[in-house]
Length: 294
Image (cartoon, rainbow, N blue to C red):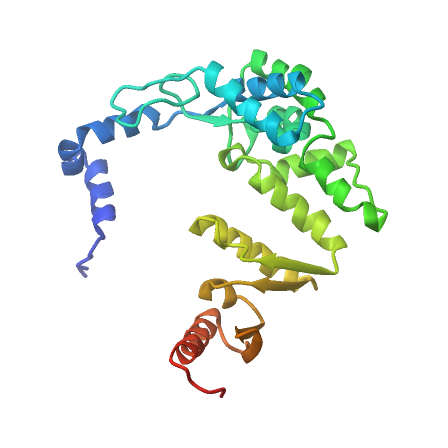
């Protein structure tokens, strides 16, 4: 029995590469493929220079307005950070070591977890990173002590004061948060969302979201909508105001506002996201053309 298989362009390119055939795209775009080859197969490392400079500036501006402190910290980073320019770059200049993959630390967002996180990163299954002993020591002795109770963790506690709740993590809980919520590939966003989902949202009666996906890229928007879906399934009420049909199609009930009044509403019922998306689109068309309520 014979089978005539049709492969996608990418699949065929992969098969040709395995077979030792030349890559026509590499021949047409040699500079791009040299850039890819320079990073391919390299384990990324943690670059702490930005975190050290930010911390250094914040120490010097204690007592000043926060917005000025951040501005001065960014200026301090811009004036003192090492800039690397790799071969074949057109948009040149970046942090990190020459010709290496790297992750940057943001202590102002997750500094109180970084010492613990760095100990786990080399063996981290999802995103393993290397960190040298000198940099790890700088994080443990300089960065983490300064940022303790000055980051998102502390901000969360300040917003829970009216509920007479305070979050304190044991060593075991801290290790769990680091393992499940810290990923240097995406900075502090996964950690923040982890704490929001597993701590903050559980203490809220109602989540109000005003255009939550408006300033996000498509991947971040999808992550946020997925998080909303998860906490909603756990019993959390979410009220979202949005112009995004995609975001609205994730809801159980959609209200349409025209001239300050509820014009129409749609219940999900048994509809899929795709069916609800189409229903919302049809209603918006009706609104735009001056149709009546149905």
